[in-house]
Length: 493
View 1 (cartoon, rainbow, N blue to C red):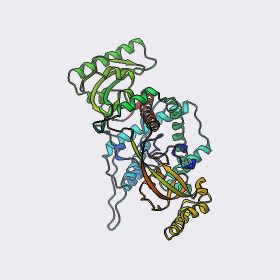
View 2: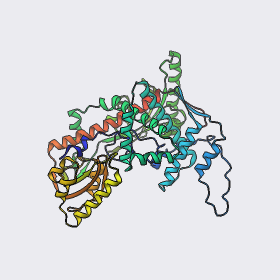
View 3: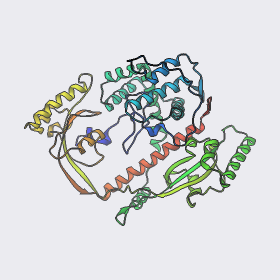
View 4: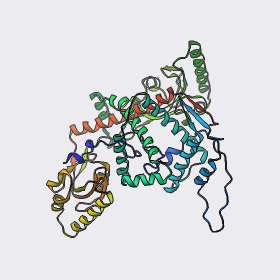
């Protein structure tokens, strides 16, 4: 099989919304409406405190008879020019302004409206967008302080990747960005910041993840089939109230903060609503969610937390305040459950597949490549020989073999190609399919089920363990950045 099509051979910045199992990288800013459409779940935080006093309502002129009603977000923008651009949050040495917050919220509302998705209440949206802006600013500042630089050439490659992932040319991408009211220079600047953050995460998180043989053995044992069903490991939902201690705190200040944590512990032990205590008092990034870190396997929890909750019953508050480098923690084991059965498979389905590729670029727009492949598909469906046409027209290394990629297993090919392939029946030829490599015609020749060798099972387990550790390490890294940052809100949250 050509290396170009192997999934592990792909090295493309992960700049679009994450939707596959093996997600990589940070989501592209919701400012770029064509590059990523945030899901409603990203915009609504359960039980989040409601923001008030952020948006000053403007009188909306009524539409003239026979005229369409004005777009609410556009009306807000028109009225916004009359508002003072106030500071709504301070993040270390920079600020987030009311204009930034309202503009970003309007853009997300427009995306949801265009996608036909339900619209969250405006105050909840404003709260969540503000938190997103804070987290973006914290990570960008960390990347800049680390001295990470992104060249113009790297930005160009990232733009090409975004265009390919959104199935448009770079020229079309630019036109759509500018139609949205965002300048191209601003788009490039925002994208440069995203790449900076990705580089920092790769250096600080990804490169430090190691998987040991013992962890693989434990994974395979935990996911062994029991009574015909796969049993996953136990998962713990830990909630915390963090009382953060500044790095330069004096002994007296530390004692005062510990006393605050002890007082919160007594309230929690006395029956007070832990989630409400966390929302009102915690300095942790998960405070709006009642302090919940979400369900995790014990190995994905910070060691100090894991040791404290491993033997507790759900609903129990840890009986003492814990101290870490970030400050003082009050913990509660909110829940405990048996993990899902995501076992390493004993059998897999392999696909025998071939393809014809036309690469896209400045001299071959995607639309023209699709048109040419549609013509070739018509020839094939009317009796043309797929292999002969592949040898003549395909620009992939597999062309000499008639486009044959051989027998492929799940996860070996890039997602866009694999998803299209999986929808085909043996003998069927796809419509033109766009991937980061260009445009393809795909034909499935056959399918078969095979037993997975012990070596393959270990490879699968290694990948899963690494992914779990990577997710946990990334979440902890982002939380630490947030907790170490100075954030001052200038609005009533």
